[in-house]
Image (cartoon, rainbow, N blue to C red; front, side, top):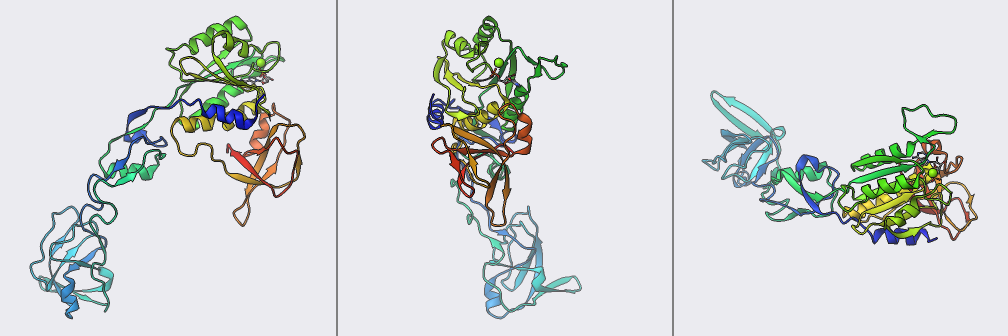
Length: 406
Ligand code: AMP
Ligand code: MG
């Protein structure tokens, strides 16, 4: 049996190491960028008017001029016009190119408009203006070729905006591993089946499928009975070097029971065991290994809370690191709200409900439930507080790592 820290380290040493793939821009949301996005020209690309109003030559104002004859209008989307005399002004709209010969924009709110026949004049209502005001200068945000988004960033609508502004209709992002979810147990039936007295429905499959869907991962699911030969035959196909799957999540059949065939079958199939059993509760029987073709195998204990803990504690950070997300192991902390004690020399994953106080502190309230089979208790909670193995009493007010699943 190894510690949780050793298990984490071994898993992080065996990543999927996703390759970059080119994907259409609108399919990249939530994925990890694997290239730099650079400005294809200055941003903004021209001196851009930022207010509706008039553009003038500041010098005329400095010399005392307050009223300006409006010679024409410059709309957004028009080529730049020219001011024909420093005494005139050009009416300008937000987003327009600043007209040639002007250097300052005055907004309508600071102007009085006067029509004399066909002619329009604008008079300043204020005494102070600043040369260059209301103009977003060319290249003031970024210069052509500047890096706007670095590799490793998770793509959000803000990155999509930048990518589309610089003309990238596709991006290089991390390839996703394909998951196989394999449940195992003679007592397990599918959702539609009405279970007999001795049967239960295989909820772990759907929990894992949806947890992966939340992470935008694709998965297929399979179910195996407690028959060694059948397990061996099916797993040999799923784990074959040429199979489509990159990673296999097994649930059930890894403990010490007489029908727990998974570790033996994996050994018979030549899957290298990297560890079996972690000093933690729940989830102690967790088995981890890899095939010669580098397909990772997470054999999670079947108890639903154990499966859930192991998925969030180990599979999620493994996936993050595999996709080249930065800081895959960083965890927030939460403060224990009540004293708690746990004697065994195991890391304990305490089910907790969280709350944020008026000082923005995150508190964790223990809601223990009925143990690792009590998956309904997960509904009451938001995550697990990770209580270290070395300690047995945990005092209210102490902070611990927190794994949020809701
Ligand atoms: P095992 O790890 O196979 O000994 O299973 C431990 C417990 O988890 C047993 O009570 C199983 O019935 C239950 N279990 C195993 N797999 C699943 C599953 N896919 N869905 C729900 N419960 C399961
Ligand atoms: Mg079983």
